[in-house]
Length: 306
Image (cartoon, rainbow, N blue to C red; front, side, top):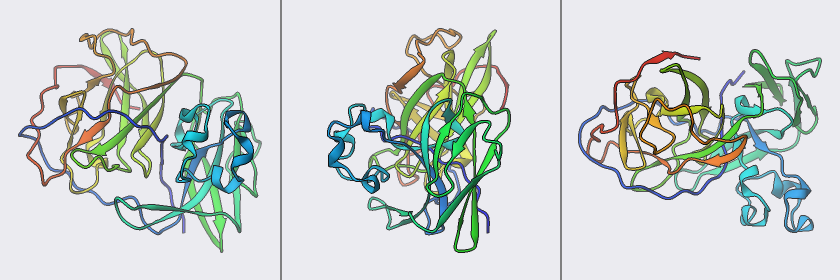
């Protein structure tokens, strides 16, 4: 059996901005957290990023649910579950075979830590070095031109996930949560767009992890973004709220600005090579609430998709 799935993100805490209203459409889908094993990646914790290196065991560093771990990091933004299609050159990750038990808000991420053999379609190790016994991956300095595949073989079954190595660009952190409860919305995909002569080109897609967080790799001239409507699980409307404004996820030209300068055609966003965060969470309304009214949609020209 093969299991192909994109996973994302970093654990980020952001302030909640109030949203609400009427209007919109419902969405359908299925939960992404199951007991079926699947491949995920987490950012590798290096001793240089630990306040007290001797305090933590390798198993604790490998588990993003370890209590107090973020508080023990010099820079907490370098740790978390990450979308393996958003790896940047030179970064270090650990691929893991995991499964989930429990239900919201008590989801437990279980790591299968022994008996797993790892391999990559990049057999020449042109784009990075993958350790067959641990899943540790060090990205090289060459960027991929098409997706690669990492496999985990466990008890006769092989699981597969895509990954890619991108150039160093803006590392953008955020989170997708349910309005009202602030519970994570895993599996939601977020797309980012750049401005090319007044048209908006899709530049990156990132998938929210089990904790609802996203860890995107985007060009510094990215200006707009949106949630892909049909990636929201059942029980949520096809819309999202960002910094108090509601956007229709199912409308191709309904995009949210990354900045608050009010000019959606301005290619200067202030994004830098390095890590920064979205100004607020992306809130999605459950269908048990009032239908959100789209207030942020405008006439934009989307050039193409990636």
